[in-house]
Image (cartoon, rainbow, N blue to C red; front, side, top):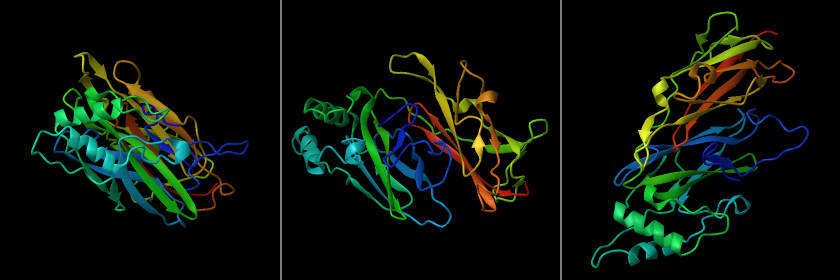
Length: 312
């Protein structure tokens, strides 16, 4: 399962049932977002790859990164659909005489922040993309738009507590027709009673909220974070920002909200209501609130705040 527009990030470990917790409830090891900075690196640019991983306080985990042009999908754990040596051979076949090229290793290591450099000159990138498509794609793999550049898959595998979670994010190595993008930035996260003022949740976790209280949450961000850009045809478009509201306990009024310039209201999209967990639900003395912002061109950003849980 892969939803590049609404959810460009997917996790291979999932389940459902009558007692299945809401999607935005944080209870077990999860990858909530993967970010590339810049989101669409041009030739010569290096994308810094980072992830927002949730783990219960008592759980430690390890992570490993890799990249690949096409994967075999969820049933095969998003394994790479092409061998590194075969991709190198495809590129070599399109090189001018006397020109050499070294493909970046598919293995990107296990550091908290990985990196991938777009080493493909636009002409080579376009040729490699078209050759791979002409060679046939695995069943279920969508045909990429090679005019945008070379879409590749960033794969993150997180292991801890006997669990393994795999997350895959599409990264477009930008060609000549793709417009540069920026990651959306959330400035702050406020909270307060519905009939009172809202104040920023302290980054140090010192803000206290009463258990069982109904608290209004509000994001602050510049409306320009939903970028207006010209697409490949020259038509002006506005990004859609999708906000996903994660909580470590309790419930939110909605799981996701969305904003697009001229089509929806940012004030409404930036608000949600959280019912703070009771002690019977969450015995810990604090709870985490996370909001992830994604645009529909591969950008991602987030804000995390931990709050103290007071008396009921």
